Amino acid sequence: MGNGIKAMTRQYMHLSSTEETAITVGRRRGKPVILKINARKMCEDGYRFYLSENKVWLTDFVPKEYINKEQIIWYVSNTLR
Image 1 (spheres, rainbow, N blue to C red):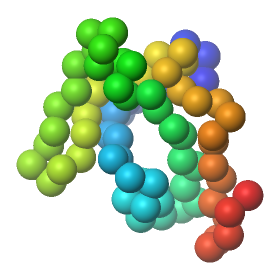
Image 2 (tube, rainbow, N blue to C red; image 1 turned 120 degrees about the vertical axis):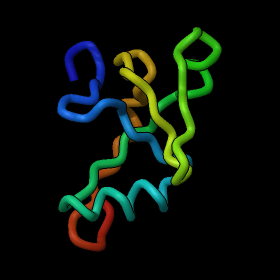
Image 3 (spheres, one colour; image 1 turned 90 degrees about the vertical axis):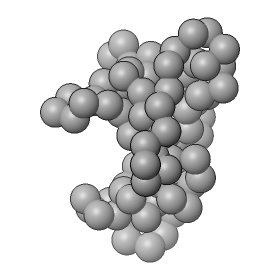
Image 4 (cartoon, rainbow, N blue to C red; image 1 turned 180 degrees about the vertical axis):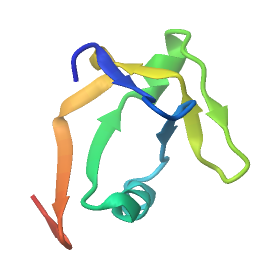
């Protein structure tokens, strides 16, 4: 993850407000990996978030210090690893 996560080819990072939504969206592209982000702390520290028309949270970049590395969840098929 280096310095954090950036949007790459997209304009913004797309964040889900629930784990269920993240799983559903992630499965569109294969096997999802769910990262828990401390978005509240990011907001308190001045990072900007935008709510899209389809209720997806957007941000420019997620610095590594806001990623909870102890709560990375890997989904393989329909099971949790």
